[in-house]
Length: 330
Image (cartoon, rainbow, N blue to C red):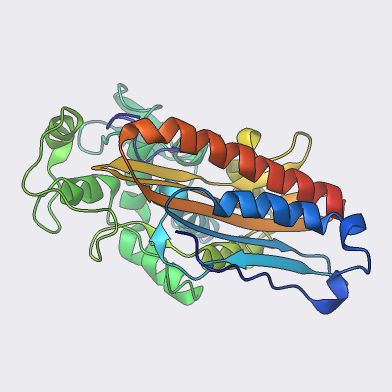
């Protein structure tokens, strides 16, 4: 993963497993929960710092497992779901329209933009939102942020009680800061090309800094997705339908969710100066009526050569966890 593709997607602490007493049948093995826990144990063995929450929302027999769930870790592009929610709220209120044409040019162009990197012109806002979620396009993200305003997204995050969540003013400002530019500076598209070629504007900074970053806890992501997918943040059923439609396009879903199961998610990742992250929060629907809401995250230090193996292990392990969950609660 080189600098044109980062921010895509792209020693273990003690474990805490929290279950409602009625959720556990007398025969642990028969319920399949033992198989879920074995798969979760494998996730905890990933290198670096791991965090997860898995919550199965059966009304009569809920079940929940968590590990480092309140840790404020780097999550990369997973925060783009908050931007989508705020944008759709503005559409619902009549402030914005998904049919409006948005300009794509060097004024907004950012790295890691598989859809809009080489395009100049206009496109409907609907396509901008789809590119932001389905392909994690950073240019699309900055276009959406420019319309709703980063501070208004932060106000939504605060109102939703997501105390651990942090977003930058734009992906370009984040990348500029990580590459050593002064706080708040946007080095522009020319500067993005300098970064892509390995250049800096000062001493590079860690993504885990406390000023310009993308962070959230697994617990907050699960709380958010549970409420968002119930329509808690929207007044109209049509808005919830649009939110679900776009979130179902995330490219992480086919790699992590068992085939044939409806799911909504938004992944995130980074490779920067020896710091790496893979994070995927979301929800799948078991048997068309039982939601299983999740967030899996790993932050680790290591050279780029470690990324393929950790990424493969992450995907295989999460797929096994979610498969065992679907089998146990289906």
